Length: 109
Image 1 (cartoon, one colour):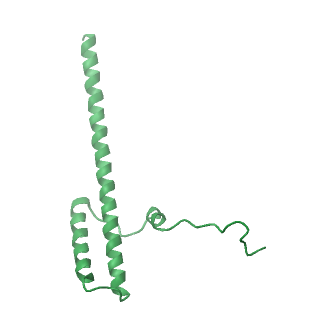
Image 2 (image 1 turned 30 degrees about the vertical axis):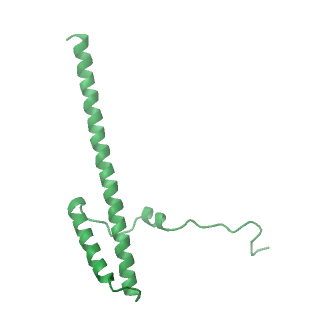
Image 3 (image 1 turned 90 degrees about the horizontal axis):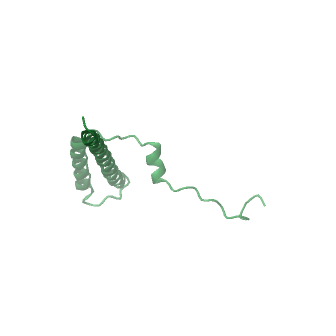
């Protein structure tokens, strides 16, 4: 096997590894986008149900809830089951960080 044959074989291996890495990256991106979409649908559904349960719903809220449930069902058919349990990351992204009192504004003084 000549030098050029070895170089070609190595180049082919490198190209294959690059393609594999690209496919893995694309799958991860698709998964991330799917999770973001599911999170948005669940948030919207929660807001609509909350409005309905607290008497703040408008006449279209029942239709909106049915539409969101249908969208979530379709999403699950494509991406798999949607988690209904909030993770620490979910909670952290929806709560504001605590704010510190300005210096000298302490009640202990």
